[in-house]
Image (cartoon, rainbow, N blue to C red; front, side, top):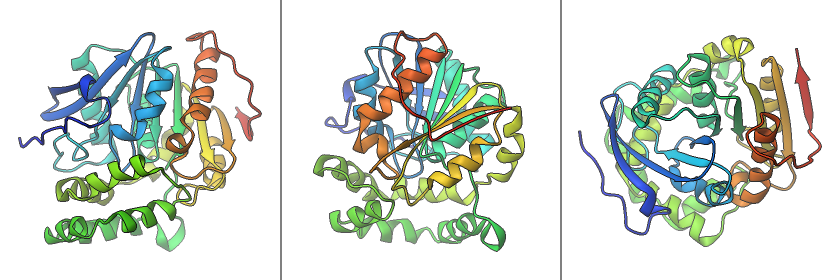
Length: 300
């Protein structure tokens, strides 16, 4: 399998490991002290997106971050459907010999976290979704994104063309369209990733195989409490979609972060960390019980 060298200046490079599991070569980062917390990034991102959030949480948790298949510096799956990605990540967790007490996923990473818990690959006390992408497009548009991604992915030159055009201005505009704004350093990490055609191909491949309706059908069986954190300026996964997804889970809570977009955990990592510690405290994992007013609290 082909692996890509991890740059020396990549965030938390000193904590990086190369782990072989489930037929893949994974880029994994582990540090901190306390109960194990698994962080799963979203489509087209990497461990870098948790760089500041992980720093805020490391005093209370053993933070485990991993690049998804085909993303960042992990090798790719042939057919990265949601159940297959969950299974592969489950194999990695077994190889690491850890039992995450909390799992937090951003965007598509939230779907992976929920699928892993439903399928028994992990048994966390709580599942946390940061800007969770849990709802497919409705009506005639359902599946449109995956069909377009599949069409694009069948033309191997396309990721190379996208990568060649990944200027700072273009990437900044793309992130701005999600409702978020990053500082120069945060933006630079995305520019560097998007200039790698292998990374873009991995993101398109993931989208081409993504189906969320089976996940929604299974969510009433989710055993851990589901905590969703959403920026009220998020244009990619709006608050109303988090509300709808939360109602499907037996136990759930939704928090709104005012003034933040789809990358709220990068824009204000401290605020996201506060809510994660609060969720951990509810499960007896930390002593922190920081008070926040939930936008929605649903229970069955």
